[in-house]
Length: 291
Image 1 (cartoon, helix red, strand yellow):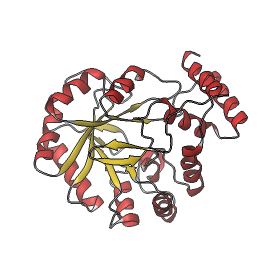
Image 2 (tube, rainbow, N blue to C red):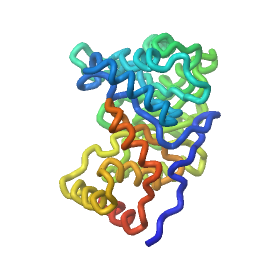
Image 3 (tube, rainbow, N blue to C red):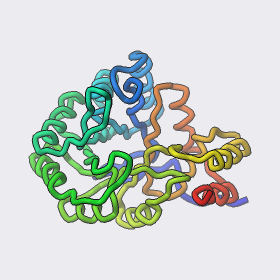
Image 4 (cartoon, rainbow, N blue to C red):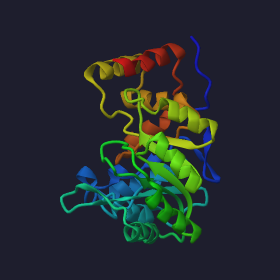
């Protein structure tokens, strides 16, 4: 039995920093539907502190989670931040009073979002800001991102943002964005079952750009889930651990940001760094996308 040789416990470049490939996503720290305060404030603080204690050096957050909830929790739990911690946030959306997800593209909205993130995180400069494209809230949709990205690039030139990434984007939009400013990461939906970005991931890897997938178990069919469950049972792991391990072995430029509001689940997720899938399991998992 052989295994594919990718350093799943290693690091990858994010902007001008190197971060561990397993990070933490703060989305689930907000209330139900990523809206309102957490069910258990103290548990949310404990998860954040345990993430750092476990060696996490990359946290993905956003000021429209809550809104303003996760960033304030991060500041309460972790400020002053250790020098090796990279906080990545997003702008380009806002929450409606009914918890809906709405575009927020006007220059004044983008500028306010950057300042909100700075204030709520307690920072003078944001390390990485992802511009979330909201032409379609359910997935990437074509359209020029130049007017919106230009505003963020101006804020970068003002010294408020160090590095820029893109989220919910197409390859055409990434190419357009790279003509405006350096793009250090792309954050799209990608997992075993949803592999539309296969070619894009390989292209970004060749250019040294990080790819950050979200929804690692999103949208699986019953048959796909059954296959994943079977592999996980044979390996003595959970389906989530196997799905995350597959992503780590898919390409060295993939950075993971699994989220949880549980310390126990956090430790399960981080243990994936030591889970190397043998090639026969990889072959079986690779076939999920066609089921």
